Image 1: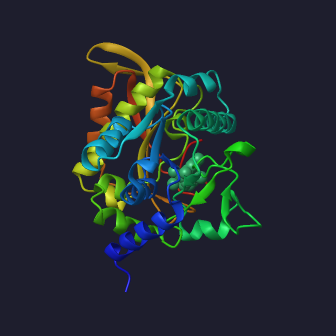
Image 2: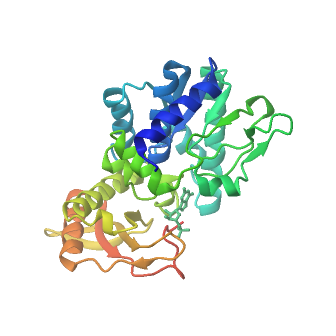
Length: 325
Ligand code: XMP
């Protein structure tokens, strides 16, 4: 029978046997897969592992700090924190087209990954949180005909862009390749990952940048992060997190008229996008209580300056996608 303890023990043995005295690079994303992977590798090979976290500046409020802190304080795993916020913002300055935005963020990710891995390296292996369903698809890997080993030709990030240059074609180590998502969650929980990572809602690679329609600026990012934090707090407080596939805020780059006290306002609207889904392929807008919507709306308008209106998205998928870009 499969147990998490037996899995951890066997993985550690296999990792040691495969890696020997070589060095491994892991790019942390903040999700359960890469976090679990970091734990297993660190237990197996300690400082032969380098964990790198690239902060694009598009994560949710406090998430990058929390992740680094968790790894340092709870797991004693050092993290190479790469602050690339300015670079990413620069890369999409003035861009309004959704696909162009995604493309530029993906390419910038590859560039930063290459630069930083050269600085920290050389590395022999790249660790990836490939799960069993991905092994079958596997468009981002090649199999070396001589050794039969899987080799990374692309970085499997949630960006799906960018071939790696020849000298950075790492051999892969994929300790989660026999697991399904629910099994990774069990392992993650058993090694002490907090629920906020184990059960994290899906979060797109380009992050908040595709939840700000039109141009992404520092000001808009600040507004969206604050609105998004209120959404998360209230969804958690009302114990709705587990019931929903996703619940997030979107900022629209238009302004409408409102009134606050006896002052006329002219500010951005925030869209609330709460959906239920089994797999993300189709989704239903969530029928959450009006009182919860009212509470979130009041808090956002009162606490987030720059916002004077909150609307609820009642479009299912199809025809709407879950994300707005
Ligand atoms: P859509 O918006 O296409 O999203 O209905 C379906 C699911 O996929 C997530 N999503 C992404 N996940 N990288 C990811 O890892 C991405 O670029 C990306 N875009 C969308 C979305 O949050 C939803 O769960």
